Length: 568
Ligand SMILES: Nc1nc2c(c(=O)[nH]1)N[C@H]1C(S)=C(S)[C@@H](COP(=O)(O)OP(=O)(O)OC[C@H]3O[C@@H](n4cnc5c(=O)[nH]c(N)nc54)[C@H](O)[C@@H]3O)O[C@H]1N2
Ligand SMILES: Nc1nc2c(c(=O)[nH]1)N[C@H]1C(S)=C(S)[C@@H](COP(=O)(O)OP(=O)(O)OC[C@H]3O[C@@H](n4cnc5c(=O)[nH]c(N)nc54)[C@H](O)[C@@H]3O)O[C@H]1N2
Ligand code: SF4
Ligand SMILES: [Mo]
Image (cartoon, rainbow, N blue to C red; front, side):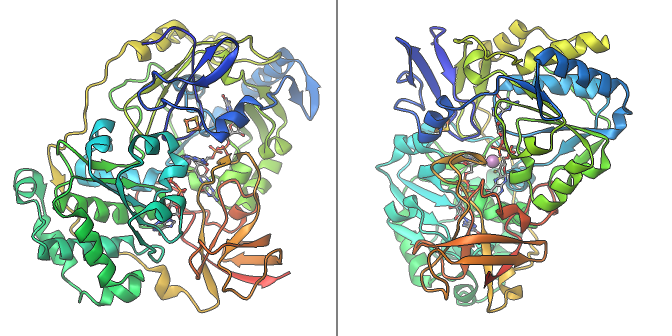
């Protein structure tokens, strides 16, 4: 397939696009099955990025070799169990995993869980044992697409392009671009998706849409699940979810007799019970038989590594929950491809910790976290290192051949690992060729067929609507078109509906049980009246979010919080 002039987009995104370099120009690869067209704004920003060309020690520029030597000395003089290896998702290439091999042999503490999809992933695994998307062709072949808690056309623009002429139904508190394009938009109250899943299951039964064959052949506990669904009067859902039964009727008119795809996103699971909320939705999907069909199915952020055994072996002895990391507990922290100061919950605790620890940052650009770094090691940029990108959105891979000279003073993740193995006398690092070729030569089988499905049988969710007082707002946080998490275009505004008592440009102080932060208001009629939105990468957002994990997956719960707002 490849003519050795391709470059994988390394960014953390469903699409996993591939570019080609032709006559000195880099553009979207028309031959790649999901990329096909031109690349996005974020990729264009990445091409213009100022990649680091100097290493730093104590904020002074230095050479790469000095910085690496200093790191080696420091690691040799520190108790490994007092060091933390913290990896983000700034680059999703498989070669990013190489340094894990070193830090696990050395004995660092690792993180577990995620700031991202973890709760939802575990929710799906609880029901079906794995989290694998169906082949993308089944999405393309389906008639109707339900976009549930996912900003589909923004966060996976190329996948969207493949299906943009379908009938869409969107379930989202915000009137997102895909909600506007949909035949039906259910502007649901935050954290009530499990209730909607139960309500839909009730309706499905009344509409005779339960898939008896699937339930009989693969299902366990469907009766219990149905009991859960009918344990409440239908009308009681109207108030809690904010949706009318008329709209639910319309939804069934749109899906009845059709092949259906469900594009599930992060929005439903950024809560303490995010796993079970997701599992309730997947159980509804199973109830109406979306799984194991020729067309349609359920797509989420899948396990992109399924079908592969990473050639970079690592077994760590101790792990700490990612959303609850306190850098204060370590003498040295090694941060790779991450910007925790902006992206992790509760920024203040993180900053206090970074001030008290010896911080090593390994990345391509100077970011907010570098402010607290004692050593900065420039990582080679994506155009100058070989890599393979497996996607969490679909089954196709993208390949990077190193097409450029690397920037000066930089080192790739693989070379860094090789260097550290050498300095510490460690052995058995797989060669770069072998690791690279393993991914490009391996054929993956479709593993999305579900041999069994366990329906959700019990559900306990503490609703935010019960806790919420009149003067409080739901605090939502999602993605933007012109930024990729904390990278690229900055946007620190707080978005609210024009019906509120504030005005565009007002300076406000926002407080939550976890902290306070200042914002400038932007009015936007797409936002639900009792919600405010601060987009991913907003430098102030995570001063307000819980430094806590969800109940199942050690995953972040950014939206398990209500805020108060006053003029400042
Ligand atoms: N352009 C761009 N693309 C990206 C990214 C980016 O930063 N920019 N980030 C990438 C990453 S890291 C990820 S993980 C993916 C995530 O991609 P998505 O899953 O699309 O994630 P979000 O944008 O966080 O949120 C999805 C939607 O959930 C809605 N939502 C919030 N709360 C609720 C709720 O309680 N119920 C329901 N039903 N909906 C709710 C939000 O309004 C939002 O529209 O996108 C990737 N793609
Ligand atoms: N409030 C709020 N917080 C959120 C979210 C939200 O929606 N709202 N979203 C969450 C989600 S879904 C995610 S996935 C996380 C993401 O959080 P992080 O994983 O911290 O990702 P970024 O903030 O994008 O920072 C990535 C950094 O990686 C560096 N980098 C880029 N390429 C390379 C490379 O090739 N090598 C190395 N070594 N470094 C590189 C870049 O310089 C960049 O600063 O944020 C989470 N935080
Ligand atoms: S859509 Fe996603 S994968 Fe494709 S170029 Fe843009 S950021 Fe990269
Ligand atoms: Mo993410």
